[in-house]
Each structure stands twice: as structure tokens, then as C-alpha cells.
Image (tube, rainbow, N blue to C red):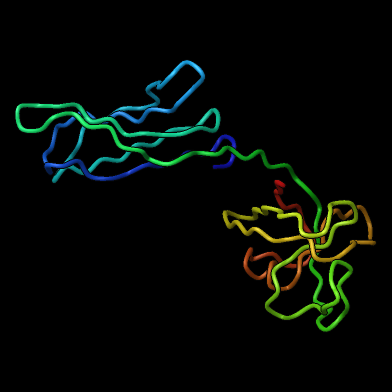
Length: 170
């Protein structure tokens, strides 16, 4: 989850009944702490939404009632990523050599060029609500104050054309 964005956990309690208490908890250094709570709706469905303040393990705890005992189940993990703005451009030099391998740039190859990140570094890129994870496969850009060159496939996946500001995390 990007820092400041909302995370969503949804599911269904068993037995499928409305009105059951559902609590999302995150594990901290001081034990399990409630993050958000709700009541199950039609057929036991629930939806929990919150803005995570940090990473950690999650679990769902349901309250017991006359029909069913309370339960506790793992809900996975949450990670919070901090993005920053970076000026980027698109490059489509298909067939050209790549600095990080013996290969050449292909039409469907996801990747970025960067002057300083180690080859193979995974870069998470956001642009207009779309997100792509692409490795550093080349060096550059060598024009203007740009920090990244996006391969044609990466740019197409993001809906990015030309030159602009992207959000990156690595």
C-alpha cells in the first residue's frame, strides 16, 4: 500500500449471519492491536478499510454469539511503500544493446534505465493510478534532468507517453 492510501480487507464470517463483530488487528511490539472494526452484513460479508501507519502481520477476529464461537484467522501482511516524484521519459530503441546484460531491448520487455541504481534493482512505478514493477536493465537517461527512461512496454503498461513525472519506490 502506498503511504497515505487506503488498504482493504474483505471476507465472510461463518456461519453466514449479519451482525457479527469483525475486528482487524495488526501485530505490534506490544502485541495485537485493533486497527478497525465493523459488523458483518448480508450473508456474513464484511469489508474493512483503513490507512495503514506501518507494516506488519494482520489477523481477523470475530466475536462469538449464541450460534458460533469467536474466531481468529491470519489476514496476511501489510507493507507501506513511500513513493517520491521523479522525472522520466520513454525510450523505444528496440534491438539496441542493454548495459545490464548481453541482450537487446525487446518490444514487450519491462524495464527502466537509471544511471546509479544497481542493475536488476526492482523499481515500483506509479502513474495516473497504474502501478508497474520493473527492473533496472539499462543505463541512462542522458538528456535533461531526467532520472529514469521507461521501456516502451513499461510506458504502455502505465499509460505514459513522452516525458513527465512518475512516482517511484525501490
